[in-house]
Length: 120
Image (cartoon, rainbow, N blue to C red; front, side, top):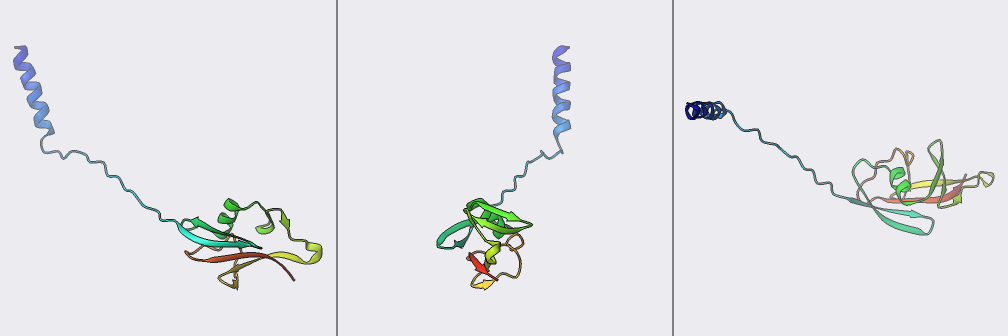
């Protein structure tokens, strides 16, 4: 009797599994390719890897010692722009003055970024 009951339970278990597709876990993997930008600060030049959507400010914070006020860089690696001398850190992208600040400029592969002390 126990064998018959056990056989019925096993049979029902097998039948209940029929017709149902097994759940398959799907893994989505994304390969993020690092892109490279060249950053020059005064005489120092670095090639820096970055990922999509990073800004010039993100990369600067990761690679240099920065001080900033209201989103404007005031010091890089200890070199402060001297306001009494009308100095500021200019931000140049691919040879042209940037039209936005470093925190808004999203980097592109191959960009050449320059930060240098300038006067107004």
